[in-house]
Amino acid sequence: MRNILLFLLMTPCHFILAQTNGNYLIRAGSLFDSETGQFRDGMAILVNDNKIAAVKSSKDVSQQEQKDYQLIDLSEYTVLPGLIDAHTHLLNREIVYPQNEFSGLDMVRTLMLDGDAYRAIYGAARARAYVEAGITSVQDLGNSGEFADIALRRAIHEGLVIGPRMRCAGKGLSSQGGQLPGLIYKYQPIVNDEYRIIKSPDDGVQAVRENVTQGADVIKIYSNNTPNNTSLSIEEMQAIVREAHRLHRRVTAHATDNQAVYNAVVAGVDGIEHGYDVADSTLELMAKKGVVLVPTDGDSVTFTQYAKLASPEDPKSMIAEIMAYRRHLGDRLRRAIQKGVTIVAGSDDYVDFKMPFAEPSKRTLIGYHESGVPIAQVLQFATINASRQLNWADRVGVLKPGYLADIIAVDRDLDKNIDAILHVHFVMKDGKVVVK
Ligand SMILES: [Zn+2]
Image (tube, rainbow, N blue to C red; front, side):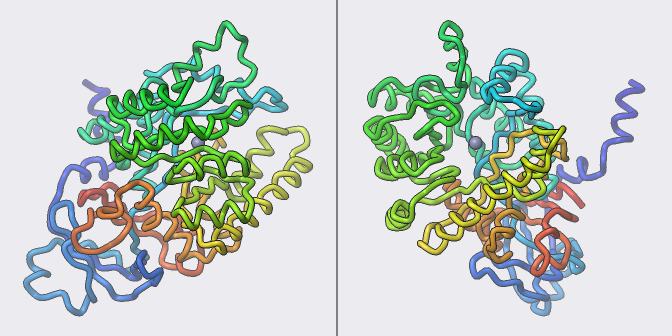
């Protein structure tokens, strides 16, 4: 009993606030319009239950509305739609080991020593941090064991734990070996705990049906499965895409090199994850076919932190190496934009960088800006563009009437300083106040 009392006393007030819907009048210092990419001063938002009822000039709020709606004064801040991270792995934690030459090691540790029960609890802790950091929707792309992501989505939906809206992939569809290179042959069956191994086009169709049966919102495939060296064939991916589209699910493909990106695009996928090395001609094809790119590029802080963890004796040379790689990623991001490819924000946040949960996700946005993308455009990647990749373009990512009331506030100078995105002062999800 004493422990329960202590828990209640220590529980932050936003936990209690999260329980109520109502009518709110939000006054915004500045408001980011994700459709136009403009910041607008002196705006107000009316929230009715879980939806946005109106967005208008503060001057046009009537006396009656002032009476009927409870005021939330965010006039010191910049207000924007809840952020969307289109590539998360909430239930996956990769520990960085110094001088580790065996990149499959940590996935084996996760499968053999963590297990689904621990991973779901770990995911719940991170889910709470995500929504409190202003990320109100995520697309979780596998590496969640036996559909534990779908269990977490359910627990959030039922209000058992606090977290973002989740779109879940369930198991990723991969060719032999998944992403566990070097696993001894007799231990290969543990790969099935994490990936659905595809053996033929027909088996790909069956795998889509299995995932959809378990509740998958999106189908994640591995066009190549780096760091392993097998890959799905174009025929297998075509069969998967056809069946997924028949069942109204989008397909998004892990693809790191140009061949893998090209094969997936030819097979008809809707999104490319990573696309680290991609030729201009492939980018042109993506633009033509409306295939989005989710560039999972970190920022200089996360890259530096990685070098310190991976090479603690001599981080300097590794920092130089990975910063050169970051410049390479920046170049491909600018080329993709220039070719007209729709960019969607996604962090691929699973490495334990020894920083607060959800911060690496936010730093992905800072990374895009470091690559030369203007702040307003970066915010569009993480709002309106990402809503399309989640197949939720009709409900999140924009502040306008009829959309879900996912609204956050950050430091006022966001239009000039991308770091403002790290300083969240208010979060509303589904019309409920989560952080105030
Ligand atoms: Zn990933």
